[in-house]
Image (tube, rainbow, N blue to C red; front, side):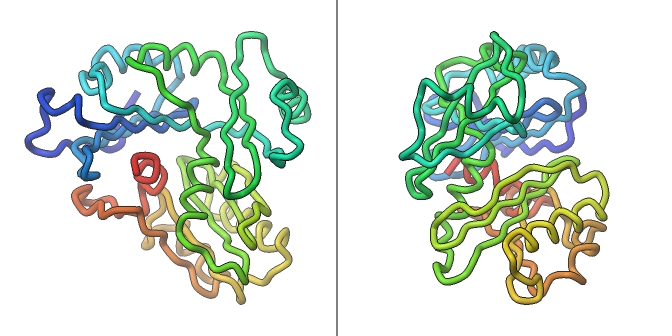
Length: 271
């Protein structure tokens, strides 16, 4: 396990924890958490790279900020196994059927859902048993959201134009999330491995091809772990007419070297 980013605001203490909110974003190989207050001031943000989810109980035992009761706990899961069902067709008892074309569902795995009323859809996703067991060490009950649900709610809430598609690329560690909305309807959503700039270019152009539009006509909205001066952004730029870095819902300048778009997912989870 390695800490890839750590920020702790001066004055953060256990005395103010009960009034704060804990936001968590986690997957098989990463875990990030943030503590914010009622005014959305960020007191703590840490991000770790994991060798295995089995490391999570040890992380919880070492970190006082993960053992404290909070006013609210929100967490989102990064996992590629999920699917969207139109709300009118969704049946609670058929969740496993919806996922059978994607992955085997083991008896100890959980099948969870997030409703997205604004998009008239239900996100059905797999919560692997190894992650479910690890997260049981956290105090308090929490709703589990899927990363796609968090990002789609954030994108829809940005007041996108109804007369043209909205294309979004969100960068994670060695992967890229791509989504598209048109007329407030979900048109595309997928998570791909992206271990090189060439991978990112391929999947972004695949999104444009799927939507039947030219990169020269529509901008791409970009967020996540991407540096405008880095190789990934530079590889994409020649193909795009107007790449736009997405703003977080509130200023995150206190994060120092990390721009607000870097933690677009966690910041929207906290908002």
